Image (cartoon, rainbow, N blue to C red; front, side, top):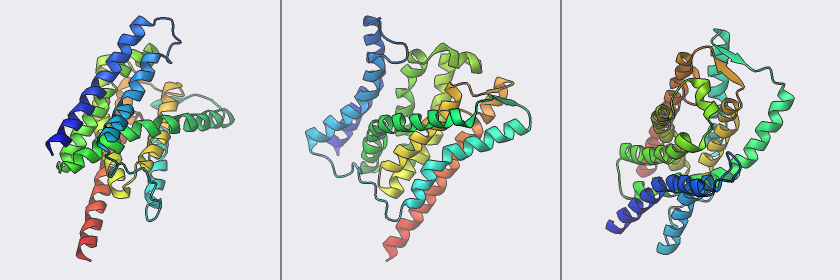
Length: 278
């Protein structure tokens, strides 16, 4: 148990410093394309690479959950694919109806190929990312018999803080200008939102015993709400409305994800109890 805790600590430390090592690398290698630097690459690959090295060194593969486990879990795959696009459509639809958001007049024939391309790229990226978060950190915390709230809190906070160099350094200034928030403020906002999202990600992993629903959900999030946001395809008339209705960082979607995660948790516990009785 002590060794298992030590490995979790090693993973967390390497993860939290990975982005800052990437920032340092970019300060040395200045002649790089904006938004696609070696530092960003280092930030992205270090968590899954660390998880892989730890598993290989300890010959520890029993809880990696790489199999898709479709049997009995198709409904959860559907949830994973539709939750973010559905919530995005709802909050932007309501915001448009009451006149607090403007939508860019882009034809569906242009949007769909871009979203499709985003799905393909995002799927590859998220295989590596989910291998680290729900493929290593979450199951290791569960294996240490941590209470559910600790699993959510620790894995969610590490996941969120791993994004800090991205928000503070790597992400372009135009993103923050559009929502009138500082980079530091966005880090705090990101922590709150991802802590809510993480409950849903962890519970989908636990109820399916597979990282693949999380990969698909993460990819759908990147391809729809995140794509629409970074592409500037909608804009709220006031940043005050954005904190409520924005599908990426607004309170409605964050709380909805938290509620969905807690519902899945309740179903998981009830299902486990029924199996134990039989």
